[in-house]
Image 1 (tube, rainbow, N blue to C red):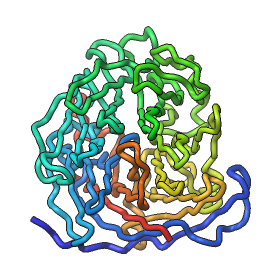
Image 2: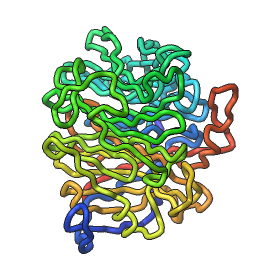
Image 3: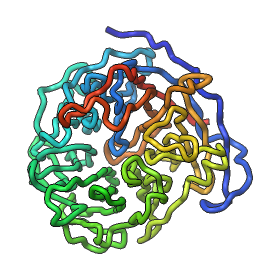
Length: 457
């Protein structure tokens, strides 16, 4: 069944343009805009309380004729829908099956022939699941579920290279009683899997103690695999790392080009930042900051969202832009949360989405949380910063949060302004509905999934 789109243009008409003479000093107001809202639509009224969460992975793909969107719904099933640009119509969503709980959201990617792939679930207890569309550029029917030979897995990120090899990185329980590592695996164009490679251990020798990893991949046209991730063990603050591989994932090096000894640990020479106190970037667990994602600019340089900072490669070093001062200048009294995602188009325009909350009001998504759009056409020397909402005025009792922006699913940069999705609804406490260690959604939360299209000004 095809439904005619009822496009919703009710978004917050708030756009503050802030320019800086450099990435570190304030200057005059920008005179021209970079990007604007094209359309806003609620595409699900029953999203999971983690519908769009885990910004490390892509969930939107735009082709010549269609846009595909993947998310996690209230029943913790992964769904994919499509929008036909010419007819301005939406198809019914395809149900790809259960992700087990609200931590099992999808990573969406596509090969050179147009076949869609979704990698998702479960949450530590079982291997990752993979499904492939039966036809190119068509999300209506999918092949049977394939099991990724991955161990107990969580938080996948999946990207294709130019040989149609899929590269996947994820958190892995080697065994349910063993250590938790960051793991990498490849799937060739003929469906063969490589031997898994363990990349990092946040707590060497600590047995099965809890460890956290979010990891995000990007692959450049020259075949370099770029990987950014955080790592920390329970009751300790976070470390943040960047590594890359120039030989298809066999060996890895740091930003200086020095070969790394695996497994990476908090003492390895690829660690870019180690937090010492919870005041550096307030988080929701022990103050630890999470990574957003990694993206490549039009020159092939990696950019990484980590808390309130944008990290980017300059030669053989990583430099930072502190976004907090720019957000504060645009919207006094608001601060960035610890999540955000970034992308670039082929013209070098930077787009980033995150959500802000009142300064000093902690938690994953307080009621006053709002989605923020940040854009720059000069690599972070100046920014356009705006608030985005599907309601005008925004409901003061419903947080808008966890935005996830479209990014390349292969080595090609976007040839258009990206789209993004976010969720609107109460996140509940921590992991609501905790039943014997399986996190399920509270249907009373009524989470909306909102899709936003952008266009250049």
